[in-house]
Length: 303
Image 1: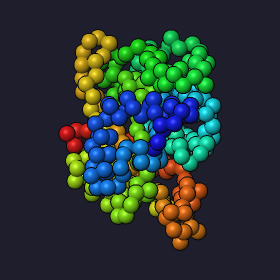
Image 2: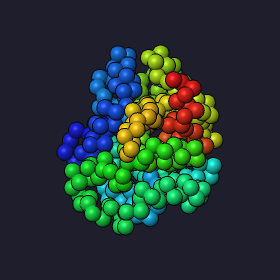
Image 3: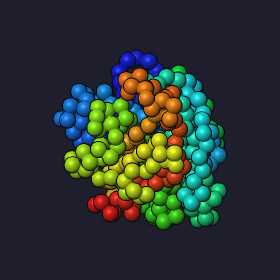
Image 4: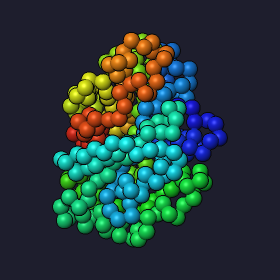
């Protein structure tokens, strides 16, 4: 995860990661623990499997707008995923080079919510009459990084946040947190044995006090058994709302992924394995439970 050179995409990713790491104390806890074990010598040694963003499916926003940033910088759009119970859809994007993380962008299907929930979201986004991506220079790193932390709509009132929370915890998260980096993901399979297996890595995480999302089990396993994922429970943040009221709400979290070799490559030595030899993409059932890292049931269970 070395984004230190001066290439535009590296600078964009670094511009995302630095404030995210400051906001999510678990990042330092995990990286310090990994250093103490000798798994890494510095944070930059960690291989980042993917980063994820959440969006609202309203005119001029959503996936069709947000994806332009990464498509412009060489990513290619891949598989589509649909989450009917959570009223979400998503795509993942393949990076221009294996040294960059995959990108996962999801969207709340606002038109599938109740009228009250739709009214709340449209109240805050109604002033966006054009795709805001058109207003920035995608080749200008500072423009892009500023945009990713910019308030495109007003802060919600606490009452509106809570009303939306009862129907869509995903929606309330985006309404307050906007395009803030939702999570980054440590590629566990790149670590030395025995921590290259998620079961062993999770034992380490729990030994240093990390709380894991246990929705669907602490390890979410794809149907082909080649993708295994875990995640922390989101950090709580003290949020100040438009009316001056404050509340503890869900912030961001960390994910951990183990991608196993495809059957035809199981005999390849680990040092020769590349992304093309391992299980690619994502799994709807896994992602469905990973979303719940920011849900109250998980946060309250582990508080």
